[in-house]
Length: 145
Ligand code: CA2
Image 1 (cartoon, protein in one colour):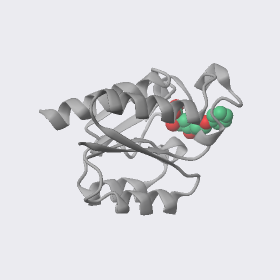
Image 2 (cartoon, rainbow, N blue to C red):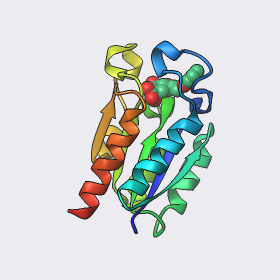
Image 3 (cartoon, helix red, strand yellow):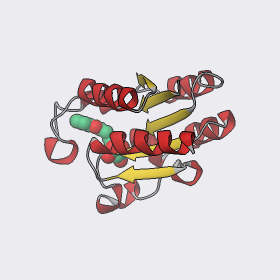
Image 4 (spheres, rainbow, N blue to C red):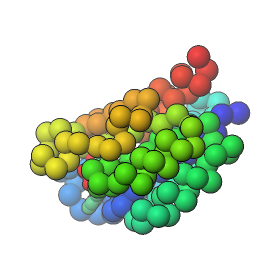
């Protein structure tokens, strides 16, 4: 059975509490349930992890080696700053799909560039939390192919 690692970065634990006009009204628990349900429907398992700390995210990516077949990551604001997370993802040789709930290209210019996108198999943004489901479907399709 394929095993997917779902990583959510800083402040995504606040989903559903503020800024519903940007991020919707569903919580991180809702996102994680959506991911688990989508993976199960596709015959896979999903393990979810959220951290507000760059080094913890790097450590979790390292620990994914030989444990997970794909990584779905919303790096939050670290998308726009973190060479460390990009290097960790490159270093474990596991295919990556990047998700953003909002359309980062329609927001402030500092959100337009992501260090992760160039090493991701696919990038989904602006589809709300549906983006996680789409990324999981894309990952499972690629793993089956
Ligand atoms: O659109 C996305 O998913 C982002 O990755 C979300 C990040 C942001 O820094 C990226 O540019 C785009 C921020 C997540 C913060 O989420 C909050 C949710 C509710 C209340 C406050 C923050």
